[in-house]
Image (tube, rainbow, N blue to C red; front, side):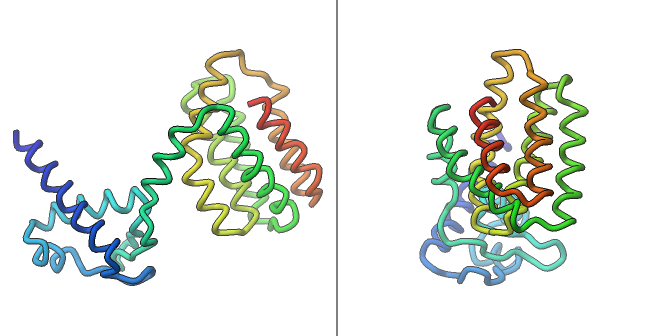
Length: 216
């Protein structure tokens, strides 16, 4: 019973904080009041505030900086976008990946740094280790590789969009790999994409990416 009451208090605190954000109580990028200050303002315990802030951080509204405090990341609740993404079907997910991921990878080929390449190689090596093993672990590693591909475009908006979309990508990959045997030729496309990015061949990187999206 205690757990139910505690959860209810946290939900109420989350709702109050969401409402304040929606009403413009704080500007984007502004440091939020401390946990004790919010606890006093809302008339709740510090533990409840802490749990509520974790929820807001998970949903993308708030950024918690260790040792520095919490900052408002956006005034637009990303939860609504995540909920919309979760309702798309496999074909819609594929279309979105073509528009978002393939184009971002084309930019990555033009903008990537040596540090990006190193991170991509490491992520691909981890994926390779798990490709024929546990599916959950492989999908998790594969997602890191794809996020780093998009991040190599050095466009924060694209990176952020892909982070919200990554749950749909993971579900799609998991569904497809659980329906059919894993194909080494399809996995090898990841390495070919990385080679094209290293060679700064944008057109080739995009073409390979589209092939991978259609096959995965």
